[in-house]
Amino acid sequence: MRVWRDWEAGMGNLLMLHNDITPPQLHVLQVIKHDTPEPVNSVCYDAFVMTDSGEVLINTERFKLLALSMG
Image 1 (cartoon, rainbow, N blue to C red):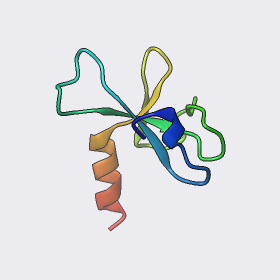
Image 2 (cartoon, rainbow, N blue to C red; image 1 turned 180 degrees about the vertical axis):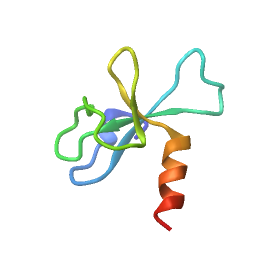
Image 3 (cartoon, one colour; image 1 turned 90 degrees about the vertical axis):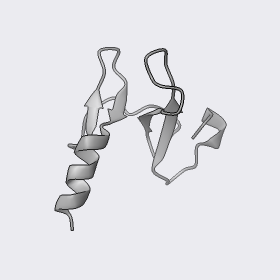
Image 4 (spheres, rainbow, N blue to C red; image 1 turned 135 degrees about the horizontal axis):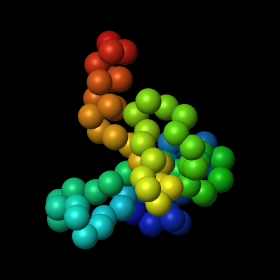
């Protein structure tokens, strides 16, 4: 999702974030709940990490390792 209005019920929604330390061509992906348009607030999968500010994000390196291990 680029904006909150793009959220869809029942889907795996990720909000594209960009901050001052992220290179212009890259985005950070924040995990959003599938049943309500609210951010996930707990780390429930190995590919998720929580920032100091409490945002749950996808860690691409962990995601790649999990995908490879699943075949």
